[in-house]
Every structure is written in C-alpha cells, then in structure tokens.
Image (cartoon, rainbow, N blue to C red; front, side):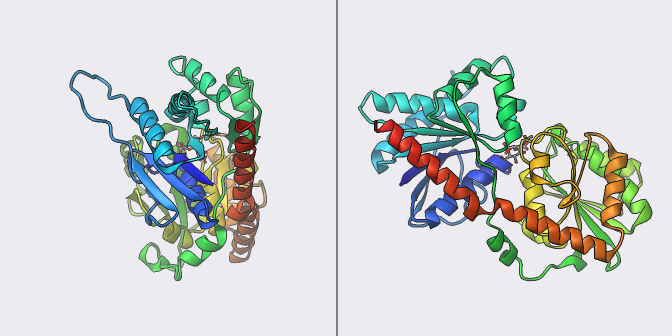
Length: 377
Ligand code: GMT
C-alpha cells in the first residue's frame, strides 16, 4: 500500500505514534509518505519505503495568520498524484482531518478517489476541538472521514459525548515496539544521575497544565522524606518556570533535575525506578506505556484512558486526580523493598506487552483495507 501520514512532527504522543506507525508499516513493505511542516522528531532515517514531504507556508504580509491548512491540502493533492498514494491517514483532527477532507474533494474533482482514516488522539477532542470556535469543523471532519479511530475506549466515549458523531469509531490503542525498545539501550548508566542507594523517579511530558507537574513534585516531596531518591523531569513547556520555583520553595533543588526536551528518553527510563503521571486528562498516556515497556512501574491519576494502560495494582497504581497523598502512599508501597520493586517492574513489562507494535499495527492495516474496499465500491 502507498500511505500518506499527516501528523504533528514535534515532541508529543500523537506525532510519536504516527511516526512509529509509519516506520512499522514501512518495515512490512508498505510505502509511507510523511507529509508535515517539519521532519518528525523520531524519523531519523529516510529509506526506500519512507519519504518525507515538507509543507511550506510562504509568509505573506497581507495575512495576519498564514494558511497552513490550505498549504497542507494542496501538498496532499500534489503528493497523491505524484506518488500514486492510495490512502491518507491523518493523526489529530485539528486541522489535519479538515485539510485531508479538502484534499479528498479536490482529488475527487479529478476522478481520484482516496479514503481518509482519521485517528483521534485526545486533546483534539477533549481540550481544543471541543471549543465552540472549532467544534463544527471537527464534527464535520470526523463525520466525513472514511474510518475513524481513537486511541482508547475512554476517548471514544468522550468523542461520542462531546460531538454529534454519525460514524463508527474503532478503538486502536497506542503501541510500542517493545523488543526494539528493550535492545536499544545496552547499559543503564544510572551512576550519572544518582548515588547507588538512591531511587530514581521520573516524569516525562510537555509540562502543560493538563499534566499537573506540580503534583509530581508534591508526590516526590513525600517520597524523598522516607526514601533516598532523585526526581528527573524530562520535557519542556509553559509550566517549567513555575515548577522550578516550586522545587526551590520546597528546598528540593539538590534532588530534582529538569532535563528539558530529550531524544534519550529510553536511556533515562532504563535507570528509572518509578514513573509519575498525575494528569488532569489523558486519552491514553503514551508516556506511561513507554515507562512500563522499559520496566518502570507507574503512579498515575485515573483520568481518561489511563486505567486502560496502567493496570491498578499490577503495572503500578491509579489515584484520583490531585490526590498526591494517595499517589505518594502508592509510590512508597512499590519502593518498599528491592523485591517488591522488582516484582512491579516485571509486571509493568508484562502489561505493556499487550500494546506491542506487532499486535496493534495489523489492526490499522485491516482498517486501511476496509477503507480501500469501501471507497472502490
Ligand atoms: O499529551 C499531550 O498534551 C500531547 C498529546 C498529543 O497530541 O500528542 O497527547 C495525546 O495523544 C497521545 C497519543 O495518542 C496520548 O497518549 C495522550 O494521552 C494524549 N494527551 C491527552 O489526552 C492530554
């Protein structure tokens, strides 16, 4: 199959999932064309089956806002024709499903029928897409996609509750190539980060308010009162300054490290003992799955799709949003002894295996085939 993938190329779960999907499809022999404004972060190698086409939006002083959707839909039309692409898979409804629909219509006018699969990732539905400014366009784009998928059952339910949806929504969870991940780090260099007797607690996110990073710090404060430990915060975003100030206020400067954005998350997870994800909302929680796949148990909130990923009492624990006392108590339960920690680590990998690439990617391929059959009828 020749597939175009449209996504956000920056740090963030939806872009990561789209990129990993493209890589997995290419490995299976499909021809994958990434179409976006920058080469996706995790797309390091272009190969025979992987292509990248950059969407440029020329700056024109008359425009207060540069029209990215227009440039994207035109680029999609050109690339579909040039490379005989058979299917569009757009990740994140705004504005990708909208631009994809326009491209479909322009191509139909030239008698080229191409199906569009739209994958909903979370914030496109629960935070941004639900805003009255966008809602009619998001509803329209979902209803006019040939296939709609969501990354969790919880996100499917949110979508049906928040929008007037006439389409079937297929749940296809996020995934990770677990064997590849495990073999990607040969030696955990934990001595760079902590003393031998210290535990390493990690958080990875875009440090937006929805991630509740101050809760991570509050939970850590309670952990380090009982167990020698360090906290590593990976990622960057609007809450960083506020969180740095909180760390100073709580006198934790010696024990908390802000690493900023990193391409070495696997190396960091390799020497982590516990992962904290206390989000307000989380359609899936790819960061939690990545931690689990590296054998790191997860202390998380029970928001959105997190209970579908982090299984309470097995791969870690769930607590109500904002309940830092319960999160700290659960963390201490896991860290109680080496033996307990190791059993949670082992179970975290076992739970993560449900989301291995080789189990999930065939579900997308089956939906592509369904879309292609339906469009050719
Ligand atoms: O979490 C974010 O703010 C980034 C966002 C994105 O678009 O990348 O993540 C969403 O999609 C991820 C991949 O499907 C999910 O794992 C995240 O749970 C989801 N974030 C939220 O729902 C807040």
